[in-house]
Image (cartoon, rainbow, N blue to C red; front, side, top):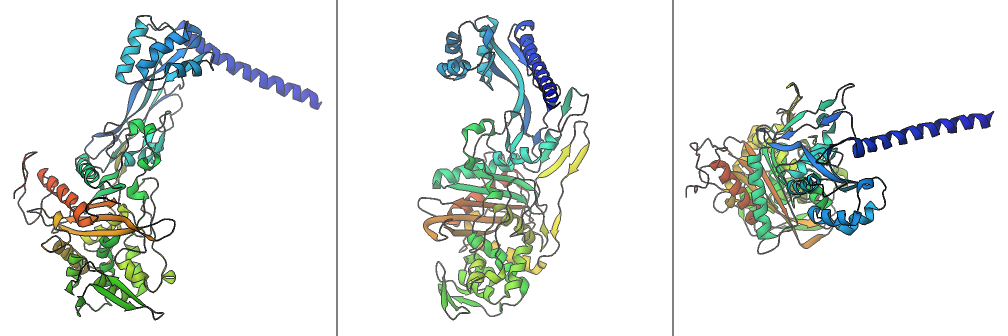
Amino acid sequence: MVSREKRRLSLLLYSITAFVALAILLRIFWVAIITGNPAGEYSDPQVSTRIVRGTITDTNGRLLAMETPYYACALLLRQVPDLQATAQTLGPILSVDPQTIVQEASRNSLYFLVKRRLDESEHGQVSALIQEKKLPGVILEKRYGRLFPQHFHAAQVVGFTNTENRGIEGLELAYEQLLSPYPEVGTSISYGNTIALTLDLDLQYLLDTQAVAIDREHYPDSIVGIIMGADTGAILAATTFPWYDPNRYQDSEPEQRQNRVVTSMYEPGSVFKIFSLAAELAAGQADFDQPFHCDGSYTFTMPNGSETTINCVSPHGTITPETMLKYSCNGAVAHWALQTDDVLFRKTITDLGFGSVWKTGMPGTIGGLVSRVETWSGRTKATMSFGQELGVTALQLATAATAIANQGTLLHPYIVESVVDHAGTTLITGEPTVANTQVFDARVADTILSGMVEATRPGGTATRTAVEGVLVAAKTGTAQIADPTTGAYGANTFLASTLAIVPADNPKYIIYIGVANPTGATIWGSNIAAPAIGSIIADMVRQGKLVSDSMERIILPVGAPLPE
């Protein structure tokens, strides 16, 4: 009985296998013999319902990713009379080694894909030879794939698709179901949704231009940059350098494809002083009425009785909260931190979003690291106050700055402006959202902004961010980078950074640039990131995107010099 059942099952499986094989052979026969296409061009036979993947645009409707037809070149091997001769003809045209074509095609009996995606020139040359009947057995298959018109601009944010037109990285991966929804039964074509991002390519170009300039002058390992709407939380531009071209992602390394704005954690250095000072002011426990005197170093006694010394670049004299930011005094900010309760200090830091993951839809986003109070050493709070012993991302720094720009109200970052279906119906709308109503009061925010403005004036560390006619608030930083294995700070590894809020009298933009391991004559954020941000601000004025309450609107022709 069992044997009979086994025979029946075997017969059934054999019948199914034979049917599938016959169907495949008939399809190949149809393509190879019956269909008479003089140009040898065929549509992709792999799917019965074609899914038109939705487009991705910037906030102004400019294309970042789109569906496009392309051609693949293949061989119907039974119709190729001379494989060696065919390979010798195709190889130079398609930039494929002829011997490789012969060797790999010889492993197949019916069909061989020579090149998956031809450019316009390759397609034209092969098509002409097919029409002249000089390449029997060679066909051009029409397929559909992704085109990224902006190439490397915002590449790590947008991501890319694989050869099956499926999202692999970036927003292409995160929004796969919206861009390429499962087709409805009975439809011959299915359209994906259009996703409009908050990115503004005008600002993206400005940020990317400065990344290139920094790379050419300082040869860093990597650069991250972000521009955020100060009053919205919208991500307007984001860059990670080195770049890659998603149209040729196979030529890139995994490190190039990382969106370091959200995936790379590092100690922020002195840029973080604006947030630690906010925590100290909000707690109200430090004695700000007693001015701090900086003689170039600050020594304090830890709970275990040992002494620790914190150094400044130079003596700063009498320091107030505003001048602490102007001169970037380590001793003063550490002194006030030690006068502030551990729990209250950490609470403000975490209320600003540090240590938490911002859910923007960008894959790989991390939350950074803010250690628990019970794990702190006697010097943790002091060193944390000037940006050591914690890990942050560029996205977190820019987002936290929205609280300073909005009188203590923290905004949630977002990058998707809208999702619209093929019929024009809006499915999703992104809009400014409050993440924390009052991290600290308006007086704290005003004090921080005032100190950041002072930093851009003569004697301050951020003078190179200053642009005439615009009230700029900025903070620079130069942090040592710890070895990920040993935890020790390297002698020649630094992060040069600057964060700016503009215009300070009516904040509209937050700009942050971080440069890892610059080489050459300088390693300071004030000399590397600050002038880059100054150039971006100047170009924003040229474009009419930036108007300060303290200035009349300035719109200059492209290429015109700024007023001296």
